[in-house]
Length: 216
Image (cartoon, rainbow, N blue to C red; front, top):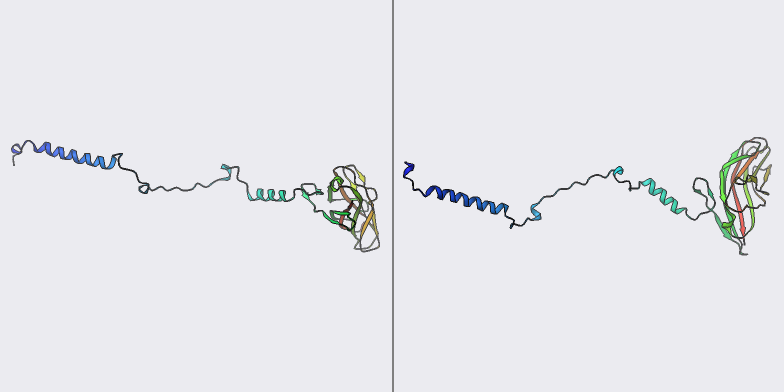
């Protein structure tokens, strides 16, 4: 077929139709009038693991445990060094007098001279107990061999002197709880500890020690 004989308007018509199709396609896919649906967009997010080094405000379980323990101990008196606390028991008599017992702890020695029982150290301020009428040192002693004497006394570490009247002696029995004479607790916060000795250097035990305070 001779192309020279084709009508002259055919080629422009074809080009026009192609242009119209391209325009329609452009309008369909790129026109701003077509709203973007959220359902057409697939967004996938993966949480990023939090490293403790990236967030220093995270408190580990050990930290929470320490905070919980500290808040439970607020308000207690009579404490050991190192922020350890001792429970104080109280009771009121029919005469209206109040008795407080400050536990000191226990220990053992085989020394024939005074041995410092460090585990019994306790800070005491008599002002925390009101008007003190009487105070006593109470020691539960034990001598398994029953050889020699077992002795105990209360020592004021802060002022470096014996608490007068606190010395107690057990001679003969296997075990015995002994109340001292009346003692005086010095004013202010003072560190006290129990001293123990076995006169014949046999093992002797302080099973329990406490201070009994009577207030009006």
